[in-house]
Length: 422
Image 1 (tube, rainbow, N blue to C red):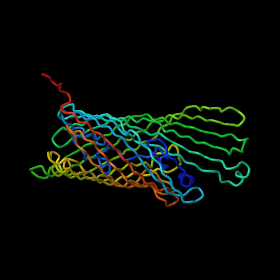
Image 2 (cartoon, helix red, strand yellow):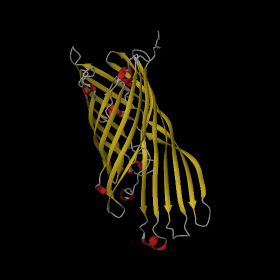
Image 3 (cartoon, helix red, strand yellow):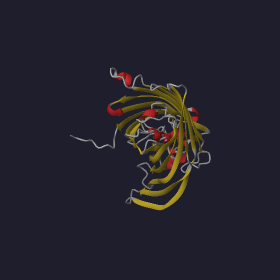
Image 4 (spheres, helix red, strand yellow):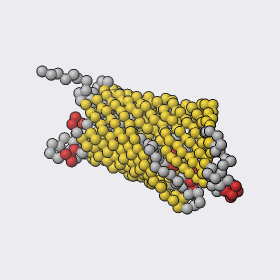
Protein backbone atom coordinates (compact mmCIF):
# COMPACT_ATOMS: atom_id res chain seq x y z
CA UNK A 1 0.00 0.00 0.00
CA UNK A 2 2.88 2.35 0.79
CA UNK A 3 4.17 2.13 -2.77
CA UNK A 4 0.82 2.84 -4.36
CA UNK A 5 0.01 5.84 -2.21
CA UNK A 6 3.40 7.56 -2.19
CA UNK A 7 4.85 6.90 -5.58
CA UNK A 8 3.18 9.79 -7.35
CA UNK A 9 5.47 12.28 -5.64
CA UNK A 10 7.96 12.05 -8.52
CA UNK A 11 10.22 14.43 -10.36
CA UNK A 12 11.93 14.43 -13.73
CA UNK A 13 15.38 12.89 -13.72
CA UNK A 14 18.16 12.68 -16.27
CA UNK A 15 18.11 8.88 -16.42
CA UNK A 16 17.32 6.30 -19.07
CA UNK A 17 13.82 5.36 -17.88
CA UNK A 18 11.38 6.70 -15.33
CA UNK A 19 8.65 4.54 -13.85
CA UNK A 20 7.65 3.86 -10.22
CA UNK A 21 7.14 0.24 -11.25
CA UNK A 22 10.88 -0.05 -11.90
CA UNK A 23 11.40 -0.14 -8.13
CA UNK A 24 10.74 -3.88 -8.03
CA UNK A 25 12.95 -6.74 -9.18
CA UNK A 26 15.41 -5.91 -11.95
CA UNK A 27 13.29 -2.97 -13.08
CA UNK A 28 11.13 -2.41 -16.13
CA UNK A 29 11.73 -4.91 -18.94
CA UNK A 30 10.93 -2.79 -22.01
CA UNK A 31 10.05 -3.80 -25.54
CA UNK A 32 13.33 -5.08 -26.92
CA UNK A 33 14.64 -4.62 -30.44
CA UNK A 34 15.76 -1.79 -32.71
CA UNK A 35 13.73 0.92 -34.45
CA UNK A 36 12.53 -1.26 -37.34
CA UNK A 37 10.91 -3.93 -35.16
CA UNK A 38 9.84 -1.54 -32.39
CA UNK A 39 7.70 0.30 -34.95
CA UNK A 40 5.86 -2.98 -35.56
CA UNK A 41 4.85 -3.62 -31.96
CA UNK A 42 8.17 -5.25 -31.05
CA UNK A 43 7.79 -8.29 -33.33
CA UNK A 44 10.99 -10.14 -34.15
CA UNK A 45 10.76 -13.87 -34.62
CA UNK A 46 10.11 -14.15 -38.36
CA UNK A 47 11.77 -10.83 -39.25
CA UNK A 48 14.82 -11.27 -41.49
CA UNK A 49 16.48 -8.91 -43.92
CA UNK A 50 19.99 -8.36 -45.30
CA UNK A 51 19.58 -4.64 -44.53
CA UNK A 52 18.87 -4.74 -40.79
CA UNK A 53 20.03 -6.42 -37.58
CA UNK A 54 17.50 -8.54 -35.68
CA UNK A 55 19.36 -9.75 -32.60
CA UNK A 56 16.19 -11.13 -31.00
CA UNK A 57 16.34 -14.15 -33.32
CA UNK A 58 19.97 -15.00 -34.18
CA UNK A 59 18.83 -17.23 -37.08
CA UNK A 60 18.18 -13.98 -38.97
CA UNK A 61 21.93 -13.31 -39.18
CA UNK A 62 22.10 -15.88 -41.99
CA UNK A 63 20.16 -13.43 -44.20
CA UNK A 64 23.09 -11.03 -44.13
CA UNK A 65 24.29 -10.15 -47.64
CA UNK A 66 27.51 -12.07 -48.32
CA UNK A 67 29.19 -8.86 -49.55
CA UNK A 68 27.98 -6.31 -47.00
CA UNK A 69 28.60 -4.80 -43.60
CA UNK A 70 25.80 -3.36 -41.41
CA UNK A 71 26.11 -0.92 -38.51
CA UNK A 72 23.13 0.18 -36.40
CA UNK A 73 23.04 3.00 -33.86
CA UNK A 74 19.99 4.19 -31.92
CA UNK A 75 18.79 6.84 -29.48
CA UNK A 76 15.66 6.74 -27.35
CA UNK A 77 13.53 9.14 -25.32
CA UNK A 78 10.78 8.23 -22.87
CA UNK A 79 8.06 10.61 -21.68
CA UNK A 80 5.59 9.42 -19.04
CA UNK A 81 2.64 10.77 -17.08
CA UNK A 82 1.20 9.22 -13.93
CA UNK A 83 -2.13 9.32 -12.15
CA UNK A 84 -3.17 7.79 -8.86
CA UNK A 85 -3.46 8.57 -5.16
CA UNK A 86 -1.04 9.90 -2.59
CA UNK A 87 -0.68 8.50 0.93
CA UNK A 88 -3.66 10.58 2.07
CA UNK A 89 -5.89 9.12 -0.70
CA UNK A 90 -5.90 12.39 -2.63
CA UNK A 91 -5.88 12.13 -6.42
CA UNK A 92 -2.54 13.28 -7.80
CA UNK A 93 -0.69 13.31 -11.11
CA UNK A 94 2.90 13.79 -12.24
CA UNK A 95 5.09 13.54 -15.31
CA UNK A 96 8.70 12.72 -16.17
CA UNK A 97 11.08 12.34 -19.07
CA UNK A 98 14.28 10.40 -19.69
CA UNK A 99 16.45 9.29 -22.57
CA UNK A 100 19.86 8.37 -23.91
CA UNK A 101 21.78 6.06 -26.22
CA UNK A 102 19.76 2.91 -26.83
CA UNK A 103 21.93 0.51 -28.82
CA UNK A 104 24.99 -0.08 -30.98
CA UNK A 105 25.34 -3.16 -33.18
CA UNK A 106 27.19 -4.53 -36.21
CA UNK A 107 26.57 -7.45 -38.58
CA UNK A 108 28.75 -8.96 -41.27
CA UNK A 109 29.00 -12.11 -43.42
CA UNK A 110 31.39 -14.98 -42.83
CA UNK A 111 30.36 -16.92 -45.92
CA UNK A 112 27.32 -17.23 -48.17
CA UNK A 113 25.57 -19.32 -45.53
CA UNK A 114 26.90 -17.82 -42.31
CA UNK A 115 26.39 -14.36 -40.86
CA UNK A 116 27.49 -12.86 -37.54
CA UNK A 117 26.39 -9.95 -35.38
CA UNK A 118 27.47 -8.25 -32.16
CA UNK A 119 26.17 -5.34 -30.15
CA UNK A 120 24.93 -3.91 -26.91
CA UNK A 121 21.34 -3.08 -25.92
CA UNK A 122 19.35 -2.61 -22.68
CA UNK A 123 17.67 -5.57 -21.00
CA UNK A 124 16.03 -3.78 -18.04
CA UNK A 125 15.95 -0.25 -16.62
CA UNK A 126 15.51 1.28 -13.17
CA UNK A 127 14.57 4.91 -12.59
CA UNK A 128 12.29 6.35 -9.92
CA UNK A 129 12.06 8.76 -6.98
CA UNK A 130 9.39 8.22 -4.34
CA UNK A 131 8.54 10.45 -1.38
CA UNK A 132 6.28 9.93 1.61
CA UNK A 133 5.86 11.62 5.00
CA UNK A 134 5.37 10.35 8.54
CA UNK A 135 1.72 10.00 9.56
CA UNK A 136 1.95 8.53 13.06
CA UNK A 137 0.28 11.04 15.46
CA UNK A 138 2.75 10.42 18.30
CA UNK A 139 5.83 10.91 16.11
CA UNK A 140 4.29 14.00 14.53
CA UNK A 141 3.69 15.52 17.96
CA UNK A 142 7.10 14.64 19.44
CA UNK A 143 9.49 14.85 16.48
CA UNK A 144 7.62 16.39 13.58
CA UNK A 145 6.95 15.59 9.94
CA UNK A 146 9.72 13.18 8.94
CA UNK A 147 10.38 12.87 5.23
CA UNK A 148 11.26 9.52 3.61
CA UNK A 149 12.86 9.47 0.17
CA UNK A 150 13.40 6.39 -1.98
CA UNK A 151 15.29 6.64 -5.30
CA UNK A 152 16.74 4.22 -7.79
CA UNK A 153 18.56 4.27 -11.09
CA UNK A 154 20.56 1.99 -13.37
CA UNK A 155 19.72 -1.16 -15.24
CA UNK A 156 21.00 -4.33 -16.85
CA UNK A 157 22.57 -4.30 -20.31
CA UNK A 158 23.13 -7.21 -22.65
CA UNK A 159 26.21 -7.60 -24.79
CA UNK A 160 25.55 -10.16 -27.51
CA UNK A 161 27.74 -11.96 -30.03
CA UNK A 162 26.06 -14.46 -32.32
CA UNK A 163 26.01 -16.31 -35.60
CA UNK A 164 23.35 -17.61 -37.97
CA UNK A 165 23.73 -20.52 -40.38
CA UNK A 166 21.55 -21.62 -43.31
CA UNK A 167 22.21 -25.37 -43.71
CA UNK A 168 19.74 -25.55 -46.57
CA UNK A 169 17.47 -23.28 -48.55
CA UNK A 170 14.77 -21.29 -46.69
CA UNK A 171 15.88 -22.57 -43.28
CA UNK A 172 18.35 -21.08 -40.82
CA UNK A 173 19.45 -21.58 -37.22
CA UNK A 174 21.44 -19.34 -34.94
CA UNK A 175 22.68 -18.66 -31.43
CA UNK A 176 23.71 -15.68 -29.33
CA UNK A 177 26.25 -15.63 -26.54
CA UNK A 178 24.95 -13.02 -24.07
CA UNK A 179 26.83 -11.21 -21.32
CA UNK A 180 24.59 -9.43 -18.81
CA UNK A 181 26.14 -6.56 -16.89
CA UNK A 182 25.16 -3.36 -15.12
CA UNK A 183 24.31 -1.93 -11.73
CA UNK A 184 21.09 -1.28 -9.84
CA UNK A 185 21.60 1.64 -7.47
CA UNK A 186 19.19 2.44 -4.63
CA UNK A 187 19.16 5.23 -2.07
CA UNK A 188 16.87 5.58 0.97
CA UNK A 189 16.88 8.77 3.03
CA UNK A 190 15.32 9.69 6.37
CA UNK A 191 15.16 13.46 6.79
CA UNK A 192 14.07 14.98 10.08
CA UNK A 193 12.50 18.43 10.42
CA UNK A 194 14.98 21.29 10.80
CA UNK A 195 13.57 21.99 14.24
CA UNK A 196 14.52 18.49 15.42
CA UNK A 197 18.10 19.04 16.63
CA UNK A 198 18.49 15.82 18.59
CA UNK A 199 17.89 13.47 15.66
CA UNK A 200 20.22 12.30 12.92
CA UNK A 201 19.41 12.25 9.24
CA UNK A 202 20.32 8.93 7.65
CA UNK A 203 20.99 7.82 4.10
CA UNK A 204 21.42 4.18 3.17
CA UNK A 205 22.77 3.54 -0.32
CA UNK A 206 23.06 0.15 -1.96
CA UNK A 207 24.44 -0.93 -5.28
CA UNK A 208 23.86 -4.31 -6.90
CA UNK A 209 26.45 -5.19 -9.53
CA UNK A 210 25.22 -7.71 -12.11
CA UNK A 211 27.59 -9.80 -14.18
CA UNK A 212 26.94 -13.17 -15.82
CA UNK A 213 26.59 -15.01 -19.14
CA UNK A 214 23.79 -16.82 -20.90
CA UNK A 215 22.70 -17.70 -24.43
CA UNK A 216 19.72 -18.11 -26.72
CA UNK A 217 19.04 -20.19 -29.81
CA UNK A 218 16.62 -19.60 -32.66
CA UNK A 219 15.45 -20.84 -36.02
CA UNK A 220 13.56 -19.43 -39.00
CA UNK A 221 11.83 -21.13 -41.91
CA UNK A 222 10.22 -19.65 -45.01
CA UNK A 223 7.54 -21.48 -46.99
CA UNK A 224 6.66 -20.19 -50.47
CA UNK A 225 3.02 -20.56 -51.42
CA UNK A 226 3.29 -20.24 -55.22
CA UNK A 227 5.74 -20.97 -58.03
CA UNK A 228 6.45 -17.28 -58.63
CA UNK A 229 7.43 -16.88 -54.98
CA UNK A 230 5.20 -13.85 -54.57
CA UNK A 231 3.52 -15.17 -51.42
CA UNK A 232 5.24 -16.82 -48.49
CA UNK A 233 4.80 -17.73 -44.84
CA UNK A 234 7.57 -17.30 -42.29
CA UNK A 235 8.03 -19.09 -38.99
CA UNK A 236 10.43 -18.26 -36.19
CA UNK A 237 11.18 -19.44 -32.65
CA UNK A 238 13.77 -18.34 -30.11
CA UNK A 239 14.48 -19.91 -26.73
CA UNK A 240 16.24 -17.77 -24.13
CA UNK A 241 18.14 -20.03 -21.77
CA UNK A 242 17.49 -19.56 -18.07
CA UNK A 243 20.41 -18.50 -15.93
CA UNK A 244 21.37 -17.82 -12.33
CA UNK A 245 22.70 -14.28 -12.59
CA UNK A 246 25.55 -13.36 -10.23
CA UNK A 247 24.98 -10.28 -8.10
CA UNK A 248 27.37 -8.46 -5.79
CA UNK A 249 25.90 -6.19 -3.09
CA UNK A 250 27.52 -3.03 -1.73
CA UNK A 251 26.09 -0.90 1.11
CA UNK A 252 27.04 2.47 2.49
CA UNK A 253 25.36 4.37 5.33
CA UNK A 254 25.70 8.11 5.75
CA UNK A 255 24.78 9.84 9.02
CA UNK A 256 24.31 13.58 9.29
CA UNK A 257 23.97 15.24 12.70
CA UNK A 258 23.72 18.84 13.84
CA UNK A 259 26.63 18.54 16.30
CA UNK A 260 29.18 16.47 14.36
CA UNK A 261 30.68 15.98 10.94
CA UNK A 262 29.01 13.60 8.51
CA UNK A 263 30.20 10.05 8.82
CA UNK A 264 30.27 7.27 6.21
CA UNK A 265 29.83 3.70 7.36
CA UNK A 266 30.67 1.05 4.74
CA UNK A 267 29.24 -2.44 5.09
CA UNK A 268 30.82 -5.75 4.06
CA UNK A 269 30.08 -6.83 0.50
CA UNK A 270 28.00 -9.91 -0.13
CA UNK A 271 27.18 -12.07 -3.12
CA UNK A 272 23.98 -13.69 -4.29
CA UNK A 273 22.24 -15.01 -7.40
CA UNK A 274 19.11 -13.97 -9.23
CA UNK A 275 17.21 -16.53 -11.31
CA UNK A 276 16.52 -15.33 -14.84
CA UNK A 277 13.89 -17.79 -16.15
CA UNK A 278 13.75 -19.46 -19.54
CA UNK A 279 11.76 -17.58 -22.17
CA UNK A 280 10.17 -18.79 -25.40
CA UNK A 281 9.22 -16.49 -28.28
CA UNK A 282 7.42 -17.74 -31.40
CA UNK A 283 5.99 -15.98 -34.42
CA UNK A 284 4.44 -16.39 -37.86
CA UNK A 285 4.41 -13.97 -40.79
CA UNK A 286 3.02 -13.44 -44.27
CA UNK A 287 5.00 -11.73 -47.04
CA UNK A 288 3.71 -10.53 -50.40
CA UNK A 289 6.53 -9.88 -52.86
CA UNK A 290 8.84 -7.24 -51.42
CA UNK A 291 5.95 -4.96 -50.47
CA UNK A 292 3.89 -6.31 -47.60
CA UNK A 293 5.02 -8.00 -44.42
CA UNK A 294 2.53 -8.88 -41.65
CA UNK A 295 3.36 -10.88 -38.52
CA UNK A 296 2.11 -11.99 -35.11
CA UNK A 297 3.95 -13.53 -32.18
CA UNK A 298 3.68 -14.74 -28.60
CA UNK A 299 6.25 -14.61 -25.78
CA UNK A 300 6.19 -16.53 -22.49
CA UNK A 301 8.48 -16.41 -19.44
CA UNK A 302 7.62 -17.89 -16.03
CA UNK A 303 8.92 -15.74 -13.16
CA UNK A 304 6.88 -17.45 -10.40
CA UNK A 305 9.93 -19.34 -9.10
CA UNK A 306 12.09 -16.23 -9.05
CA UNK A 307 12.51 -14.39 -5.77
CA UNK A 308 12.58 -10.62 -6.21
CA UNK A 309 15.68 -9.65 -4.25
CA UNK A 310 14.50 -6.16 -3.25
CA UNK A 311 10.83 -6.78 -2.39
CA UNK A 312 8.50 -9.36 -0.89
CA UNK A 313 6.12 -9.09 -3.85
CA UNK A 314 5.16 -12.20 -5.74
CA UNK A 315 6.44 -12.50 -9.30
CA UNK A 316 4.12 -13.67 -12.08
CA UNK A 317 4.14 -15.33 -15.48
CA UNK A 318 5.13 -12.87 -18.19
CA UNK A 319 3.20 -13.05 -21.46
CA UNK A 320 3.32 -10.81 -24.52
CA UNK A 321 1.18 -10.70 -27.67
CA UNK A 322 2.47 -8.61 -30.58
CA UNK A 323 1.20 -7.71 -34.05
CA UNK A 324 3.08 -5.83 -36.75
CA UNK A 325 2.93 -4.82 -40.40
CA UNK A 326 5.28 -3.15 -42.86
CA UNK A 327 4.30 -1.81 -46.28
CA UNK A 328 6.73 -0.53 -48.91
CA UNK A 329 5.02 0.53 -52.18
CA UNK A 330 8.11 0.18 -54.41
CA UNK A 331 11.64 -0.07 -53.01
CA UNK A 332 13.26 0.58 -56.41
CA UNK A 333 11.02 3.40 -57.64
CA UNK A 334 13.10 6.05 -59.41
CA UNK A 335 10.44 8.76 -59.59
CA UNK A 336 8.69 8.87 -56.23
CA UNK A 337 10.70 8.82 -53.01
CA UNK A 338 7.50 8.34 -50.99
CA UNK A 339 7.02 4.95 -52.64
CA UNK A 340 10.45 3.83 -51.40
CA UNK A 341 9.63 4.56 -47.77
CA UNK A 342 8.75 1.63 -45.50
CA UNK A 343 5.61 2.38 -43.46
CA UNK A 344 5.26 0.39 -40.25
CA UNK A 345 2.63 -0.10 -37.55
CA UNK A 346 1.93 -2.50 -34.73
CA UNK A 347 0.39 -3.20 -31.35
CA UNK A 348 1.24 -5.08 -28.18
CA UNK A 349 -0.31 -6.39 -24.99
CA UNK A 350 1.92 -7.54 -22.12
CA UNK A 351 1.37 -9.15 -18.77
CA UNK A 352 4.44 -8.09 -16.82
CA UNK A 353 6.17 -10.16 -14.15
CA UNK A 354 4.95 -7.84 -11.35
CA UNK A 355 2.03 -8.63 -9.04
CA UNK A 356 1.15 -5.71 -6.73
CA UNK A 357 -1.85 -5.60 -4.38
CA UNK A 358 -2.96 -8.99 -5.75
CA UNK A 359 -3.10 -7.61 -9.30
CA UNK A 360 -0.75 -8.46 -12.14
CA UNK A 361 0.51 -5.30 -13.80
CA UNK A 362 -0.39 -5.10 -17.50
CA UNK A 363 0.70 -2.83 -20.30
CA UNK A 364 -0.57 -2.29 -23.82
CA UNK A 365 -0.07 0.11 -26.68
CA UNK A 366 0.33 0.85 -30.36
CA UNK A 367 3.37 1.76 -32.42
CA UNK A 368 4.03 3.58 -35.67
CA UNK A 369 7.15 4.27 -37.68
CA UNK A 370 8.86 4.44 -41.01
CA UNK A 371 12.16 3.75 -42.70
CA UNK A 372 13.72 6.40 -44.92
CA UNK A 373 16.09 4.79 -47.44
CA UNK A 374 19.29 6.40 -48.58
CA UNK A 375 22.23 5.36 -50.72
CA UNK A 376 23.45 1.74 -50.63
CA UNK A 377 20.43 0.57 -48.61
CA UNK A 378 21.42 2.77 -45.67
CA UNK A 379 18.29 3.91 -43.85
CA UNK A 380 17.05 6.26 -41.15
CA UNK A 381 14.41 4.59 -38.97
CA UNK A 382 11.92 6.08 -36.56
CA UNK A 383 9.52 4.34 -34.18
CA UNK A 384 6.99 5.83 -31.78
CA UNK A 385 5.20 3.83 -29.08
CA UNK A 386 2.15 5.07 -27.20
CA UNK A 387 0.98 2.90 -24.34
CA UNK A 388 -0.24 2.44 -20.79
CA UNK A 389 1.06 0.50 -17.82
CA UNK A 390 -0.83 -0.30 -14.64
CA UNK A 391 -4.23 0.88 -13.40
CA UNK A 392 -5.83 3.08 -10.75
CA UNK A 393 -7.72 0.12 -9.33
CA UNK A 394 -6.62 -1.13 -5.88
CA UNK A 395 -4.90 2.25 -5.39
CA UNK A 396 -2.30 1.46 -8.03
CA UNK A 397 -0.67 3.87 -10.46
CA UNK A 398 -1.72 4.30 -14.07
CA UNK A 399 1.19 5.26 -16.27
CA UNK A 400 0.92 6.59 -19.83
CA UNK A 401 4.14 6.54 -21.82
CA UNK A 402 5.39 7.77 -25.16
CA UNK A 403 8.65 6.26 -26.39
CA UNK A 404 10.51 7.63 -29.40
CA UNK A 405 13.35 5.60 -30.90
CA UNK A 406 15.64 6.96 -33.63
CA UNK A 407 17.96 4.58 -35.44
CA UNK A 408 20.43 4.83 -38.29
CA UNK A 409 21.37 1.68 -40.18
CA UNK A 410 24.51 2.01 -42.28
CA UNK A 411 24.83 -0.60 -44.99
CA UNK A 412 28.12 -0.82 -46.89
CA UNK A 413 28.37 -3.21 -49.84
CA UNK A 414 30.83 -4.55 -50.83
CA UNK A 415 32.66 -3.74 -47.60
CA UNK A 416 35.75 -5.91 -47.86
CA UNK A 417 36.93 -5.10 -51.38
CA UNK A 418 39.69 -2.54 -51.66
CA UNK A 419 38.86 0.30 -53.99
CA UNK A 420 41.20 0.66 -56.95
CA UNK A 421 42.18 4.03 -58.32
CA UNK A 422 43.55 4.58 -61.78
